[in-house]
Length: 145
Image (cartoon, rainbow, N blue to C red):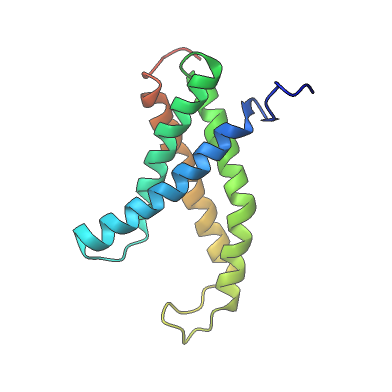
């Protein structure tokens, strides 16, 4: 590999995944502020939705700029799925460990680690599909595959 070739993971340069992760963090912070200041609540769903929306927009734009053209539906799906797999590799073990380590008397109660993993996978699946749809829309809704 020469110095000018970007490091790639799958079909995309690592910088694309880095920008997706920055969008994840930015979306979560935006969602927490929106949730606490505007809504006056503490819901997990608001930061999650803000994160997925920002990931979809940023992912589509950065990947398109690297490819020199808008993403196709297949490319957007591949990018969203690969990013979710990376998030799952880091996040799901933490979810299971957290669920297993909580006592039933804690403020949020204990949760069966298997149930926590299944809920985490379901949430990740929904986030992957939503992110993919947002990427397609942010790419101009191209119908080509």
